Image 1 (cartoon, one colour):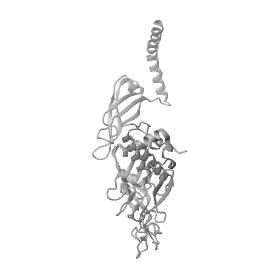
Image 2 (cartoon, helix red, strand yellow):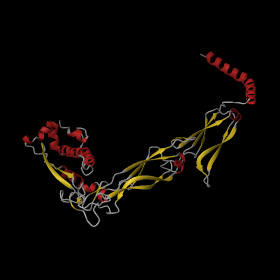
Image 3 (tube, helix red, strand yellow):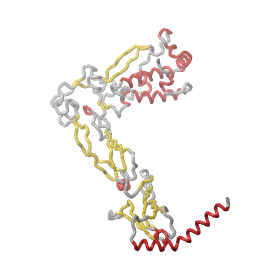
Image 4 (spheres, helix red, strand yellow):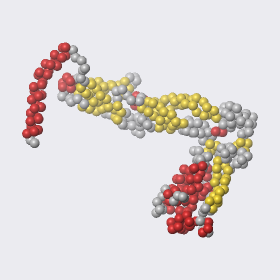
Amino acid sequence: MPRDYYEILGVSRDASENEIKKAYRQLAMRYHPDKNPGNKEAEEKFKEIAQAYAVLSDPEKRKKYDQFGEAAFDSTAGAGYAQVDPFDLFQSIFGGRGGGFSSIFDDFFTGAGGGWGGDRVLRGDDLRTTVTLDLETVARGATVDIKLNRLEPCGTCGGTGAKPGSQPVSCTQCGGRGQIRRTQRTFFGHFSSVETCPACHGSGKEIRERCRDCSGEGRVNRRRTIEVKIPPGIEDGMIIRVRGEGDVGPHGGPAGDLHVAVRIREHEFFERRGRDLICHVPVSYPQLVLGTEIEVPTLQKDSRGNQRFTRIRIPPGTDTHTIFRVRGFGLPDIHSSQKGDLLVSVEIAIPKKVSREEADLLRSLEEISSPTQSSRFSEKIRHIFRHR
């Protein structure tokens, strides 16, 4: 059962003319055969989009469609409305720009002639890899070396794919156009479609004497080391795109891109919270009661490259889990020069074992402090229940 035209374009039934045109432009660019070589499903989708737009973009046809559906354009009704070539329609909407409709897809194809009838070269594939960084690298930024295998131009044939001393010739199946045109009859009329030539895979060239080193592909696999710049403050899960460092295209086609996914290794002392860093510093009971000053490491370096420390004053009577904020000692913001803060949580350390002398001192302290603390606690409880 044919789908609803409004559903095909993804618009509502009361969509404006501009909304319909915008939807067509987006979908046509997405499913154009030049962008999806050899993809039959995308090709059929491209035709379907053209059929829907040919009707809904015309006020008279749209009115009839809203009343009678596709029956309004049945050939027996003599309407004759749908004699549309999806590629002609595409070119009329986007414009040829002097090089045919395929010049729109510069990211996917290149060629001197452009469009139907020109030499066409496929862009290489993008490559994806992952790099794991420590928090110190995130704080300062760095340049890392990434080793990978990628396809590069064949040095023997210079990327043509032809045996040295020979040259590619025009493809006999498509006449050097890189595409073949097919015509089929539908209930809308005759539709012409342009497909990538299966013989030359869109290049328009035929290699009769293939290069032995690359088997006619024009590219070979090599191991490379790529330098990738890591900006300070990068976050876990971000992807760095390095243009032109992917696989080179066949027969001299441009290279794709390298996508580097970033993973951040957990730190044994610091925990990241956005731009801020938090750490947990153990202190003793006397230090919290009497007050003290502690030294805390940071991720920053001094002028000599040594790790910087910051000193924090703990006032007398500080509770455990109190957090002290040291401004500007966190991580940099990847989008600005601002830095987060260092959050230091002081937490009482309970020893697992104590000496006999330490135990005697603790018992003496308990005898001195327990009656007072117990009395205060009991009075507080009585006060709570007395007022209920």
